[in-house]
Length: 135
Image 1 (cartoon, one colour):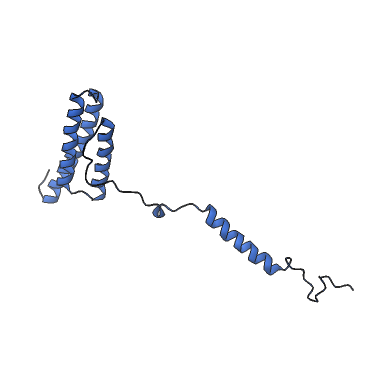
Image 2 (cartoon, rainbow, N blue to C red):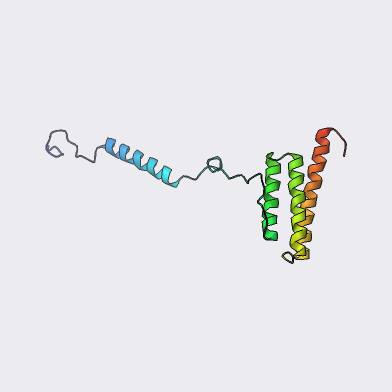
């Protein structure tokens, strides 16, 4: 009977030993997993908008962007009711200025103003509920 092997007496050829297959497969699996795994939403931290508004707005789109930021800051609890109403009122005034200067169409300005007014009402209602005054 002839013994298989490379002649060193142990009967197994380097690379064909099952231990090396298991080690290699484990390493390949770990590397593949780390390369292709999807990121968990908690690992991706979304930036928070600044609490303070920019010094000026050049267009109605800028105002709409800030409105979205203020709404988000309010719902996340970063702004108290007074700060929120103050910033929203400032946005309403900015819309009027942009509209008077011809940089905003009447329809767009009215639509955005309506959304801002609705949020102001919601904030004031919340503030009254917190103070214990029925709406």
